[in-house]
Length: 295
Ligand code: GRG
Image 1: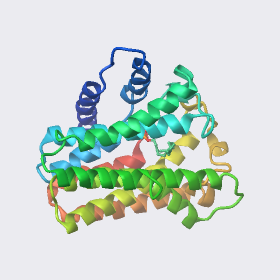
Image 2: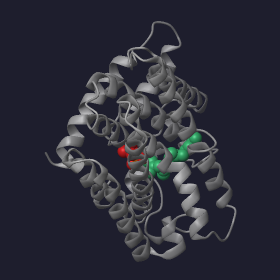
Image 3: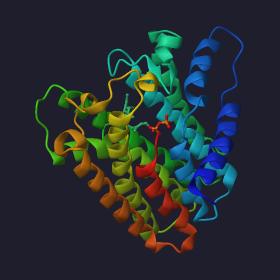
Image 4: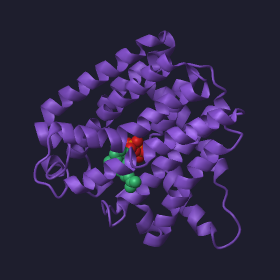
């Protein structure tokens, strides 16, 4: 199966689970659930759930369990996009080609929808339907908390916001912030299969290392897409204006060098998967897809 077809299949399956996990309640609180649904069930690559499903497949994990973990990570990802679009952060009117959550609803509702998606991700993981063994559930909760909190996504976002006030940043600084902001959640998605499948330390190390290198390449590709992007989709400037003043490797070392660095990271990422047999071939191809993608 091609990466594109496998991703489309995974996206459909996880969307079905997310939809079932977000019923609209009776009562005025329905508004926040509608905002949660608006932002999490709309279009999106569902890249992180795909990684969860593929890593889980290496350990023959029950697919329904893996899909719940995929849904949880996508809820958390959706929260980060809602909050990132707020006027206090990136101030984006558009997300995935349509009004961002605070534009469609209002700022207060968008803050609450993000908060609720974040907390719900952990509720889904902690529910016994996710895994019969409570130690596995606790481990998933711990790993996702680390990936998304101050040691991960939130910490990376803080460094990123501070970097915007600096006129200079170097390769090491940008790499650290992007590892935290973007790669940690991707890394969790790769490791989740091994947690669910009770894989040994070597398998977990291989998947984490793969996720770290590929996650960084994913962010570099995202920064390159901003330059080449369609401002009608993003509402943001494109071309080299998109890189100006941003703490990205494109800004630090230029387009060609950043592209070459991303390619090198992808090669390194794929090599970590040599630990597994040909069952990991799709994950190896995904690493390549990450830098060849157009959205
Ligand atoms: C607000 C706590 C908080 C964190 C924000 C994740 C993030 C940190 C900001 C979102 C903006 C951004 C460019 C993040 C880098 C990660 C990234 C490339 C997100 C986009 O992920 P995709 O491409 O999006 O998987 P889709 O739309 O396909 O789900």
